[in-house]
Length: 126
Image (cartoon, one colour):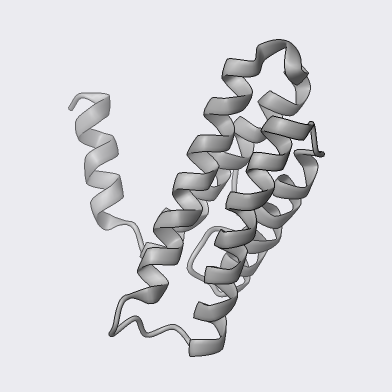
């Protein structure tokens, strides 16, 4: 079985919270790489910020869909965070704001997802 076929099969079997956790992990890893490289790699910074912003936009859209079964207050908080991520990402790119703030938000949400039992905990990841 090819690696792409395996990844596709794994994604199909994944719980939605695991998918969200994994996507946030990928976005956070990109932000951390961009933080390490600094403004010397402006293209890498822009790419990491764009990926993270698009992820948060997708989460926001999902929360706005009628029939979403998350608690309405949690949905509103996610939408608010997504709006903040969009604004703050622009500040990082234009004004050199600290990218670490975005990393902290992503990690906090990942911890929440792990605590809900839908994503692997740090103890079970190998």
